[in-house]
Amino acid sequence: MATGKRVQGGTSTSKLVQSAHIGDNAELFRRIMELHVPVHSRVADVTYGKGVFWKLIQPGTYELWASDIELAIKEQDMFVRYRDAVDCRELPYEDDSLDCVVLDPPYMEGFFRRSQTHRAGSGTHAAFRDAYADGRTYQADEGAPKWHDAVTDLYLRAGLEARRVLKPGGKLIVKTQDEVSANKQRLTHVEIITGYEDMGFYCKDLFVLVRSNAPAVSRLLEQVHARKNHSYFLVFELWKSRAKRPRSVRWSPERADPPSLERGADSAAAVDDSPKPKVAKPRKKVSKKRAKKATAKKKATAKKKATTKEVTAKKVTAKKKAAAKNKATAKNKATAKKKAAAKKKTAAKKKATAKKKR
Ligand SMILES: C[S@@+](CC[C@H](N)C(=O)[O-])C[C@H]1O[C@@H](n2cnc3c(N)ncnc32)[C@H](O)[C@@H]1O
Image (cartoon, rainbow, N blue to C red; front, side, top):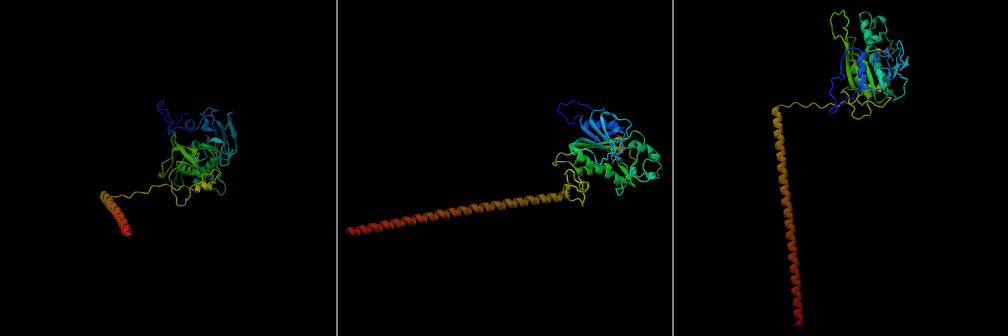
């Protein structure tokens, strides 16, 4: 596994894992695993489907736990531990027990539609549906979010569950694709990144996968958005501590408090809370002339201050000198007075002695 660290004197190589890739899931997934997940790690692919992601990875490289709401495997691999009918939002694993979770749920709202005729993947989209999902559709729960919100809801709830089962520092590898839903551009990968960052994940890497096959021909009156021919693999790391975790800048007036990073916090806490963004105050634009004037003013003020300080210091010194002089004069006077008194006393004494003698 590549360490990803540039070492002084390291061997130069052009065989680096790159962020954009033309081809299929299996090849890019193999490279991502090589780069980010050490061999023998305990990995749970919680939307294993047909196991396409694992086609190019040597069996036994990882301790692989494969689950899905409905596994679609044709034959079992002796190295893989399979579990069918497992919802990725409620995993049968202990807290802090896995090194890596792989998540690839249906990522087009069309797969969640109730009416068969309105579901994605019918008619000309059939090939697309087969290439980008497993070709099936899913019944949204009663009262659950609809359309595109059903897609993000599943990602967010599965992300919270991954956070529970991952060890600190563990990896969450997520496959997704943006979509246009109800004629609106929905950047699913951005929603997932910000949502997961709020949960305590750090988005360590992002890969773009470009389809190598040509997109299907569509009958459109007018094209409004670019036809998507790319999807994403996002690599998240469960941050080990609160300190210095990098996160995207975001702003929302409703979100006052920082999100709870406590493990096991409910989804609402994870989704509704957000950090107070640290946004630098914009600097006022100042014209050159005004800036010059301001500098001159500052200099003048500083000079005035310095002069005032100097004058004050001189005054203080003079005052001190005068006080010292006064003190010395007073001392001299006292000494003279004392001397005169002593002299007077001596003279009086002498006079008295002479009188006695007489
Ligand atoms: C895009 S496919 C995954 C393909 C898979 N990565 C592969 O390599 O074959 C989406 C998968 O998500 C599964 N799925 C849908 N909802 C799920 C849920 N709530 N929990 C677990 N799996 C779910 C589907 O059964 C399907 O296999």
